[in-house]
Amino acid sequence: MSSLNRLLYFNCVVETGSISEASRIFDVQPSSISRQLAVLEQELGVRLLNKTTRNTGLTEAGHKYYEFSQRIVSEFDEAKRVVNDLQERPRGTLKISMTVGFGESVVLPLISKFMTLYPDIDVRVELTERVVDLVEENIDVAVRSGRLPDSSMIAKRLAYNNFLLCASPQYLASKGTPLNPEDLIDHQCIQYSYSRWKDWFLMAEERIKLTINKSISVNSVNGQKQLVLNDAGLALMPFWAIKKELENGSISQVMPEHVFSPYEELSATYAIYLKRDLVSPKTRVFLDFLDENIAGVAD
Image (tube, rainbow, N blue to C red; front, side, top):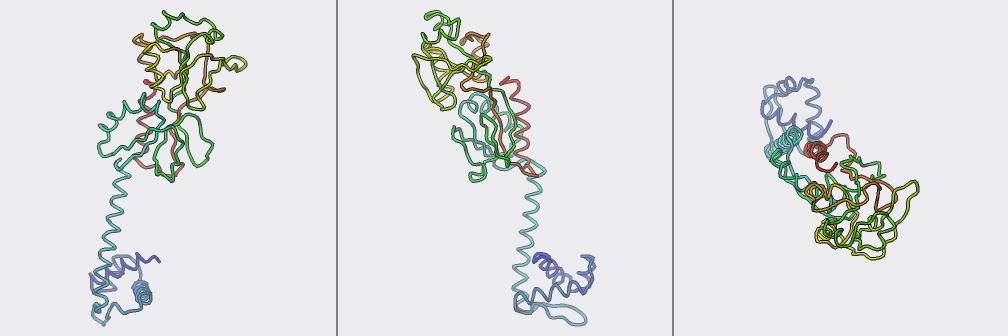
């Protein structure tokens, strides 16, 4: 029998003035109520109740204890109510960690729409390339490139990282359009300095690492895009980062007949969250929102 149940019995006996009435309310035997009250007094080392044949009253210690037990039970009821409200209605603080490129290009433009749908959720976003610890840093959702092997997490694919070789029309008009991967050695290339994205591979039957002679290195996807838009060279960029620019013609795809990648495998970007029996409503609705809204943006 938990200490909380003993408090519930004690409060009920005080408020009804009767062990038999309390037993009726809780649907237990009067002897069970008496036994648990005796255990409570034994734990405290003091008598709380004066029992007569007609009623049950409080001792001086009982009066003091009742003041606290009322508050404890009230706080417990309030805690249950708050938690139940959270489960029924998405609310609270949602902490999200996202890679800079995907976050800026794909997710952040959607946040306003998400907050309109769920005004009781406060969104906290960190844009970073570091691998965060979801447990230690109390992160609800992390957006990362590549599936994690950690069995305590679930990876939900958001978009494939379809990398395209691209440049501005002005650069291609000035420097010429490379027709074969070998031609890249004569061109200015804009590389992403993140360790896993800095090399360029031709995804043929055999993975071929391309030779780059002249390059500019920048540590963000948007930095790459700005350099491309300002005619600085060719870049290997994910489709989701340049979709609008491809549509309006400010960036052109080069060698579309070939498949390129910054590492020796094709990849995707995932929403990572902890494997739990009960996913909080705020996390669940955010994952569903990403699933419904990113497909049209990133694919």
